[in-house]
Image (cartoon, rainbow, N blue to C red; front, side, top):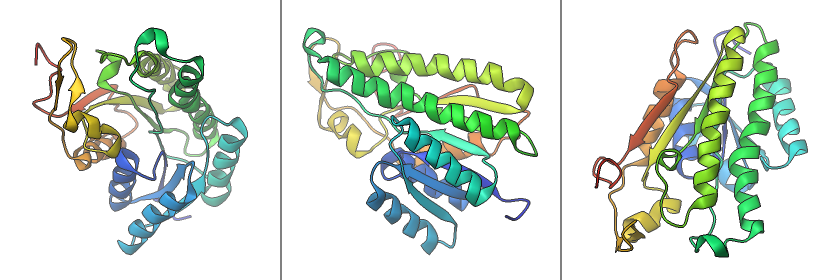
Length: 252
């Protein structure tokens, strides 16, 4: 591996924010490892990156499955020998139902993906970054403005994003002595397939249903690249990137 090559791993890289961020990171000189549950979408992103003359490698992985995550990081170790950036992007939500109607199955699925999956990947990346030479690396967690203010009928998603903030802070603290920086990007209304209902009309705290402004997913990718390109002596602990006119600050 060239001595100046930087290696980045993006989870949930087959679509949306993960896809846009992987493409942007590749354009900024990172060799990309693309992870996600379905290989087909990952390979489509890999081909798009290759057409631009950049490097990417796809590996199917369910971040909720410990053996899958261990295998993924072994692939990274065997192929590149190091990892400079982990973007914990994989995430999911539960159906928008009344709190008392949310099933344990849906709750557990969201916790497994948004929190446990991020922990499993963080644990593996931390161990690798601690051992590699030169030591250190960066972990970016995809949070949400839900970590600060919930939407109606979103208890599972909101709870896991609050918990992810705790994961970010603890990782940042424990990583100091090993030159491992960990920060979080909290995103509001990026124009992805998952956010389509915001544009179509989504319930507001007053019970009304209104469409909300969105922003280009490429703007989120630019923010991820900014965080990724900092030297390890600097860290963006928390960054909020949101559609300017969405109803989040004040009364909307």
